[in-house]
Length: 200
Image (cartoon, rainbow, N blue to C red; front, side, top):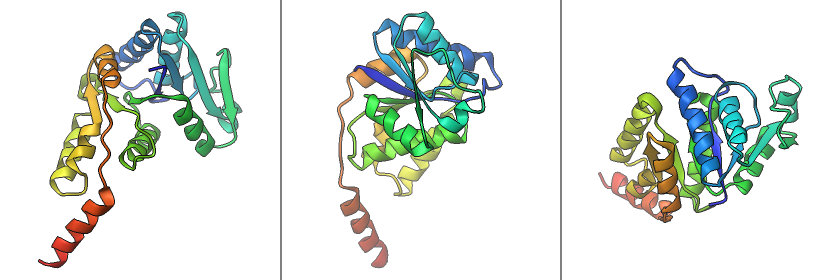
């Protein structure tokens, strides 16, 4: 595994533990000689993870749209800061550079980016692992929702298992390095469920 893409908040959040976890994730990647790909910001958890990785001697690639650079939130001293024209270009480049996707605590943008990567894995567009760093139980409710979605036949059990979760960065990276992708034909499954529903 050469690089991992990390999605996380541009806010530091309400707890010191979020900041500590972002810093530890950056150091863990550097220790294991795994590059960090992230959104290129110097604020919030984004800035914390990038700074920690740089200080630990790790590779860091930031990818940021020009309009965010213009708002002065870019980590402009990064050796490898790639400026793109749109959010779509940003996500495509980050995905292409990365061998896996991790979400730390974050808000709407973090969720959107992570679930797009997870959806691509579900569709077989890529075979890269997707996981959540569950700091202070931040993602407990989200995982409960995914379990509920699975029970209600909106998510296949195989696809639910694709999303891994750990509280420790090193353990999450261990899961990534032993990950074996599974692709299931969601279209056939959906057709079968639809046929059963129509027979009720």
